Length: 426
Ligand code: AMP
Ligand code: GLY
Image 1 (cartoon, rainbow, N blue to C red):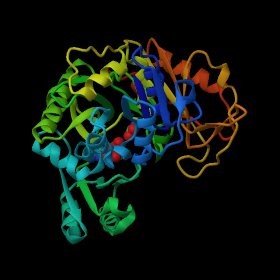
Image 2 (image 1 turned 180 degrees about the vertical axis):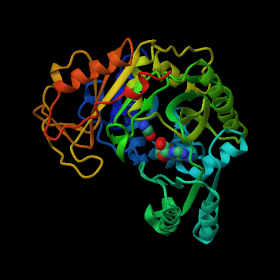
Image 3 (image 1 turned 135 degrees about the horizontal axis):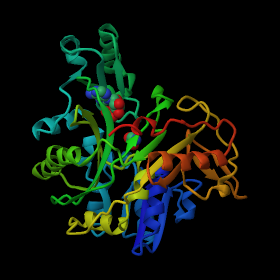
Image 4 (image 1 turned 60 degrees about the vertical axis):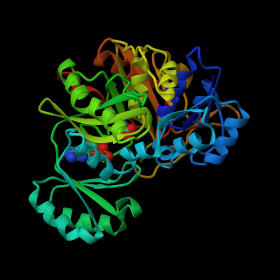
């Protein structure tokens, strides 16, 4: 089959790498792709949000399946667009209604409440109810968690220690701090624990498979300090997500989610990302996303031993049947190399050297661009995800660090403590 993958990050590099290994894949196109995805297929200069241009490409190139890497096209309704226009085309991803699990935090919280899925206590407020919001804050203990309802490029969550600051931020958010995204603000209880990311592929008819579990490292600084980023590294598997924990995740979270979507008549044939927190052994949902995680995918794909195309095709057709999703027992570690200055402003166009010296890891390009003469330069904050398999965390992460040392560009930065917190944790 001919496959079109939408997106341009490290996640899409890892998906493209995996898709290109499938016997079912004839041609793979990545739109728009990056400086590395050309190794797995053909980059196409298309915006995933320009549905008409995507449609024209699908028609002209005999595309059988569209895999949507990031949330924006899903929240904007790409599934519904093609369901109406090209009923035979397989689209991996939820309908617009399903994408609300990520597109609206208020929707996600109400969904969880309706289906008894464990999550932090919450209430939602608008400009009209701002004073009630302040009173709700007074009922909670610090720190206070304030979330913009809509998509805010990963920046819409504030965690604030002082009550006065929290009230001030609530008013600012409702006043447009994140534009329309924060016209509604979800205030919720703070949960203490360690987070992990669980990925599920569902066929929308009760069938689902759980992918390898991962943990990502969101802060820019070592020891989880400094600003939030898109993710500085990932480890899979996660030692504390053992059989007992995962049984609870399956029973209390995955099954009610899949069943709840069906009960509400929401079409969902694609990946569900459960952002979980382990609160004294009990999994609770911090957030849903409607796509795979980045950089988790760059670790998780190394541990998927089954044919991902076969699985995605079956999910998009609405019947996963008995298809297995086998997990490789090794450990995967991803270390993200970023541009100096990220997540603030950073320069672009820095020449990257040493890429051909790496043999022990896979380099999943993210913010890179290949020039006509073959030179690869930086073009984003997160530049390259360096992923390795090993016998345990220390081994896998050690291999990635050795490979990271071989790659260079002006201003290169990475975290040297990826996985360290998990090494003694069971
Ligand atoms: P979200 O965009 O909802 O994933 O939130 C971003 C980050 O904020 C999460 O990954 C958590 O680290 C943190 N966070 C969100 N909600 C809570 C909560 N209720 N308690 C503690 N931390 C939270
Ligand atoms: N790694 C978190 C995310 O993809 O949203």
